[in-house]
Image (tube, rainbow, N blue to C red; front, top):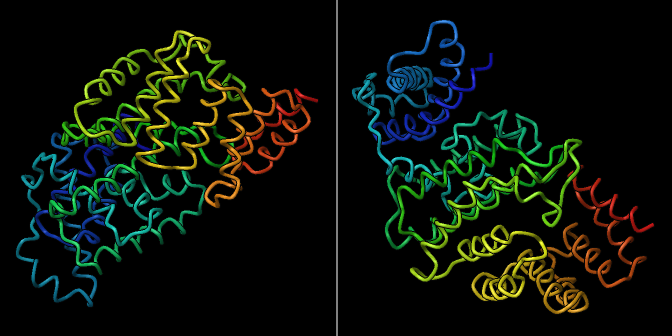
Length: 406
């Protein structure tokens, strides 16, 4: 049974609140997370028929607490743990205390350093994002059983590490916040440019990443990188509606109808990045947001201030060297100094194992070769890029570029 969209949105919002409150009160993240998922399933099954309760959060909390009791009593291996906490395991509508710290603590817990990046991503989407295991598996094109095992192992790893439901010490918090931001960035990117399959983008993932980053910004309004990441997401998402045609074909940035961008998101994103630049030490997300702002503020592709974009990429190369950023810098170099100069930058990445076999390197090289007038080499590079990508819309786009040069 599928819940109506309004109910699904409410459950997604309430799930991390209930989970945070339960773990804060009772401990045992693994048992609490399983119990909350069962409570969500019960809500999806019962609310459409019986009506939404007057206090949905208290309803979920009560059901989840009862599931925790049943789970603990049903497992002999946990008998000692049940004896320790059973006196406290009583359904209590007051367990839900709206507290931003709970959400922030959950984010830090799901991004615990003992977990691999894929596990951090999956656990964040499940525990904080409120997505089901099936939804997460679908988003990353793996079987549901595989994703379930990944999430289960992640919870066991957190338990084995002795992690408790509290914010890490101040000396650890900055590094851990960097992991949290990276996970949210990955969620957004997977939604905005789906890495595999027939869909160009997944609005559910981009919306969820923005929602969680907004919450993080509300909790940490003075953190420059949190502000920068939110600005970057908004400025990028503002273009989403113009990234594809009715037939699903990809539309490059320079061919998009800028009048149809979401100008409310553009204004919000520009205001956010303007509020932080020059006020706090520069970071990667602030610089990327500044670059995105230059793009969206240009009235046309021809009016883009490429010199400013190149200057920002050069700073980004110093602050946070990254091969994908270098590829983007190559495009900016070509716009300012000509395609040959851009190809020289691309050549510096040919031995970089992180990107040497990536379709994006071949796509950028093809674009610059085409601009340089080397049609045969450009066509071959477009075809190689199309062969290497696992995204069908990108593949079709690259194949069409190659065919255009035939």
